[in-house]
Image (cartoon, rainbow, N blue to C red; front, side):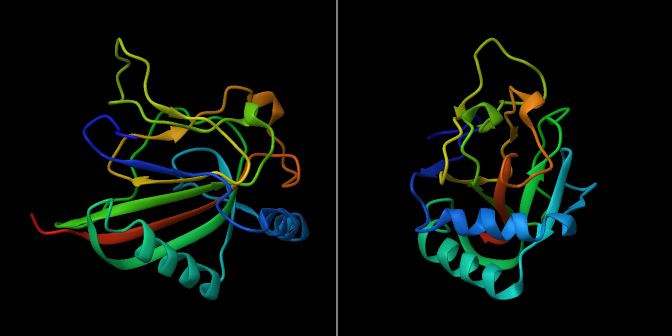
Length: 182
């Protein structure tokens, strides 16, 4: 789908073969999740190990890099993320240098759609039109250029939980990339 400002958001349903394995892994390591003050919204995270991040990097590079207008990946980060409260305001992905951008990947690993998907407002200021949204769906992958304003869309914050088996668990990655030459 096209985002405000012309960016793309790519959505893939039934993205991975065994999403329940990630939930089981998160439940096994629930005590190791820690707050991330740089996340842009209240969240606890568990960093992904290098080999997993490398596999996601390869998948992103082969599948999504070109449609999003990126040439190559410079660096990446990834986490299992557990939202603890709704965001206060939308954010953009981390700063990147000249000629670079940040790709964002988020995989829904929760079954309760009331825990929300993703919203893409055109700016920090409310407009007349409702912003584009990607509804939550178990095993739904959302990939977009982090230069777009975005935020988790959490309408039922009372349902958030510290338990990865019940809460708003996502597998998230960010890749700093070189932009395609114009």
